[in-house]
Length: 322
Image (tube, rainbow, N blue to C red):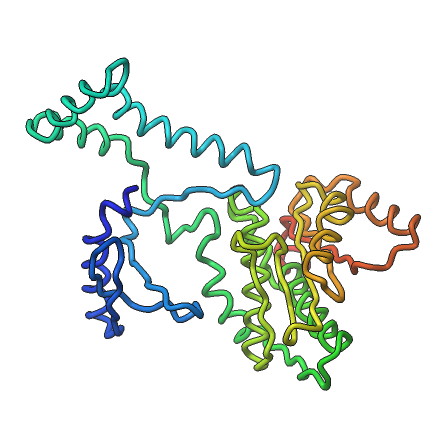
């Protein structure tokens, strides 16, 4: 709602910033308005980008697992109630004609509008702290380039377009993610705050590692993070096939359900050739990993491949040496 109302102003803001940075603009027709905006280079379809000042951005959580549904619902309900409490009172117990009169009064009398605007301003939350990045929304973008530079790893090009060759590359990337998390202090990114201990943050970190090494080695492989269009976390492919899925699950969530139900469903839906299941231990593991392995042994199960990545807090190397 706010974006639609402010779109002309956001367009002018975007145009001013792009002009200063020398970013080319193109004309887009949006809501019967001709707006000059940059084109999103990551989209195949011609799509505009609208810049938003950081001081008006706030975090709206999206539930990426069953455990996070209640958090997101509570947040969104609080936001909804905050808006409704300021506007809804004007509409209570009145008929359509009275509502129209109230609206006209708002438009005619500056006192009504000023009072409403003041109440809305008082209800606004603090903007998202992009420097501290408490939810890990931004940190992975810098890590994607930093990791490849600081911890180079050469992954040989696929000799053939086979499942075996693609799987070798995926295994190398997962192994590098595990090493960086356990040996190179990448775990600290997750442990910086409780709000960072989410599967979405973990997915972003894995993507930063995969992106870094795919790009550094020139692979024609694209890890695809789930953006809401598909449930699987990552899909590696060489063309339409072969295709390998990677699913991440935090130890605090339902590890067994992810392995036994979710991942097999994704494999069938994607017609994937292989899959890897990566459990990231951020605490509250208990016996989940032991029970998962025991179930696989009892069933004689070897697929999907399973990985355990330790992202729990630990002392630095110098402290451990002492």
